[in-house]
Length: 460
Image (cartoon, rainbow, N blue to C red):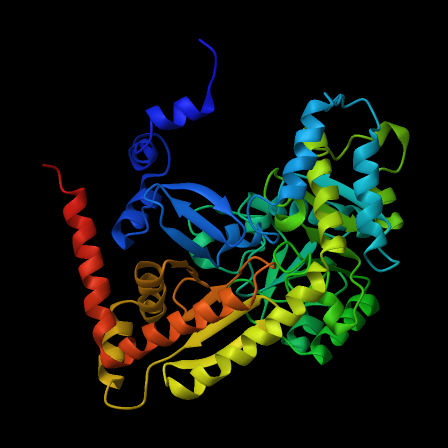
């Protein structure tokens, strides 16, 4: 019997949650069902997802930022079809294939002069692991400093640099020599790097968990203290990179030049897992220092031809469609459109971020509804933000996320191709939801959603 994808999908449709409950992560399936997010998506196009019932959803999650160019971009699809039809000699391994070299060249051309070498991998976490490994070898030092609230991945080494205790609990002991400092606190960083035993300071230009920013003076200070202490400055651009903030890489906003940069997510247009670590020639040669050490760092699928093609096609689209500049303009337009809601709704305290990486910061009102919202927060810190995310999805079919556990911040990571229509649709929807939040209707609405989900799960 030959394999037919359309037949398989049709024959097994509707089994999604049952299969995950039985064979994969049952808790994820329970969460989605409880919140009523258990949709059967069948297609994605541009800024939108479509379910089996034909309903259209505005995707402001974009696969955690993977789909910067939206879903099903025709240029990337065509490039991958060409690659498959070409029967490329993939993963020969004892080989120096052309396409990885071309993608490395394209990335180096888009970055500052100190980044001269590229190490490919399969994910952002792998890129961070490579950065830690190369930094230790290049400096001969064991220590790694990271920031609280940071998120650098969930593999064991990257997890050691993760500022979220909810991710770390029960998985220790983790990487020795890793130490946290407060994000944005230059004096704390100076104290941590002072003994000159730290290989690298690993930091996100904008923290994804909570959308936290620091000012330019901090970043200039980071670069200075790293250079003064011989510590490598590592910018984790896995989520902030490739146009997300209105610059190709977010650290460009601050005029700094990190020694190592990690990227992933948006690099392949969402089609093929890929990541990369960019570093200086000196750092790379500290690892691959002789012919017998040519393979001391590698990953089986890291230079796979389909990922390289997708990466080259993605960068081509960025150039041809002016994606970085478009993201900058849409970010400014979004900020301007959201500003009146901060004045109109006392629960919306602040809009922060850069470009199309946006954090909506919520807090309890000061008026007659204050007691109600204090009661909500007493049930679970950060619950207020869920009272925004759930009705945005159910009422307006807009997919968003809470920015981190126990914080009242909703993060927006829309595709960078979005236009004024999508921005206005979101602003109108948020205005509607916040109006009901302040009238007290959302708690009942979310309660009914959870109750209906519980009834659906109850066995007959």
